[in-house]
Length: 596
Image (cartoon, rainbow, N blue to C red; front, side):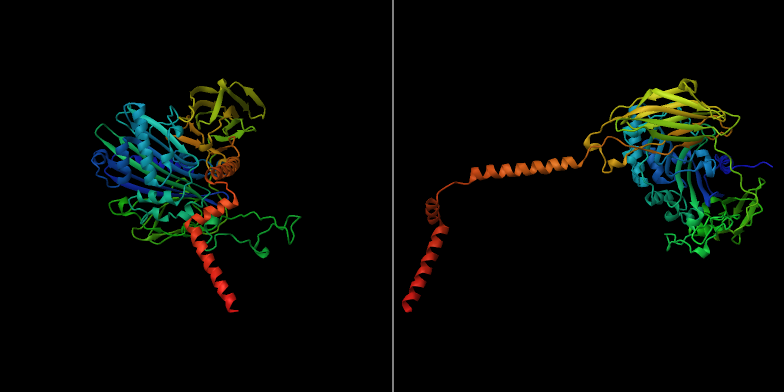
């Protein structure tokens, strides 16, 4: 029996949808659910709509969001890919990434687009217009994507759409690894959907659940799909992928902080010799956790979006990947369809009725197979000191028979200055022996664009191969620049964000691209003691105040004797008034003395 991994099922769904891409204007949405090890649940939401090129050019928007369409037309962007990502995908426990990593971005915000322009300067001007407009639309800090955070990849990205005239297209790529993704970005995302979270699978979106996930990614993709020169549609696809902790999600909102269980409620392995009243070794569970959509997402699915079909129905709106022998309870009015792979079942929802599915606690008889990732990647900063450092990137090929060819794309900030001549490689074979080899033996091609201080960052694209059952380690040295004191942020001692590396796998059986993104890095830079300028300011201000006060007294005040002061005082109006008062006082006192 042939088995399919969950990412492959997603790719198959995309292929099935692409058969209808040149049909009339249409809208589809689908939800995939798959339990993962360690009490995790992968939920993948996909929304796709098409509109004709003629309607798009005439601004006759139906399913395509008008706010985004007008921005793309004004910036002359022919293809757009936007990503909001938080967390880290645990490939060792969860297997390959959903959608082959093509819907995933680096930590923070990542954006790349193909812009139609006559030259590079015009393309960059339209790029700035695009980023600033998207910044306002999605309530993000995309307006900070300036020339220092913009690169022009050469071989790392390819258009996913069919462009009629690709000669004048310019690819620009920008990242904000320090951007915090939150509910402010989810709300504009929902407003782009035709049903806007009021019906269909988008009703499951809850900011408290979504941003409490261990990993989540939101993506927006716009591309043209042309069957011929006169038959083109504009396609927009929105995807939300998240990995939820089932036990954590089932906690009621009134009890956000988990309370420790009492000893009598703990499941302990009493066969351990060190088991006692105050020592408990967790008992390994032989059953899967019970869960339901209403518990995990905090609400039920509110029917189907009426725009998904002519009769308001959408076949296979929700799909679940669990063994067929498992019990799954669904709401009345829905219909279950099991696939031939033995693990996938889909559900046809009834229009206008809420939908919920629940899985009771059951024994684990046939676990869902998880494929090994095509490539494992890890990137860290090594070295010590505030002046220099190094980058170490480890690539592991789990396959025992096939080598992996890929492209490594590095977008480094200008204040991190790499020394490409120090690029070295070591390879560790299946026998565990590590060998130093020239980097040129693994690297087939290199594209390097050096940085210019405060104008652009470093762009590095390397095409290399990792042999089967081997681990390759690349290292290179870099130098840290010293910034001006006005360029340091308020939290400079936290470090400066370095964008994740993008890895594009080349030799894949699937036509869809496969991407891997490493985690972002924190780069410590030489940071001055910002308390010293304040001390200098205070001391300088004190000295200036004392000197100014002394000089001012010398210039304004006159030094006279006591007699001169009395004479000067008598001549003034104040002195005469005081004199009259003294005379009146003396006269009163003298009259009082005569009476006595």
